[in-house]
Amino acid sequence: MCRSIQPLRGPDGTVTDEEVRAAALQFVRKVSGYRQPSKVNSEAFEAAVDAVADASRELMDQLVGKPPARRPPRLRYPETAASKG
Figure 1 (cartoon, rainbow, N blue to C red):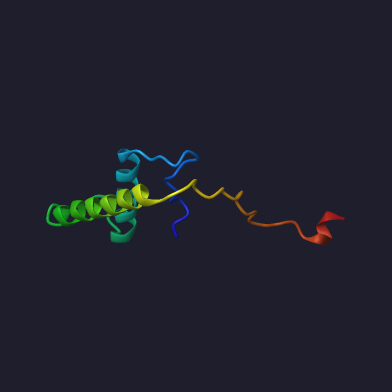
Figure 2 (cartoon, rainbow, N blue to C red):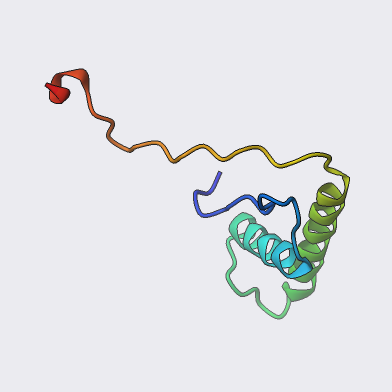
């Protein structure tokens, strides 16, 4: 998964329509390879963004319970036992 894609659900479990739409746009841009589609492809691009946003909103509305706790990011180069002394 793309490292810049972040979970939408916050600690309270809510998400705004703007956040859902922005995440859908980011996803479709990543999948399609287009930052800005040509005029010929813009209708298909927008339809894909709408479909992803709708599916994401439906998922968010159906999830039950608190979101899982986030783990701290892994260290890229963890210390080894030898370097600890």
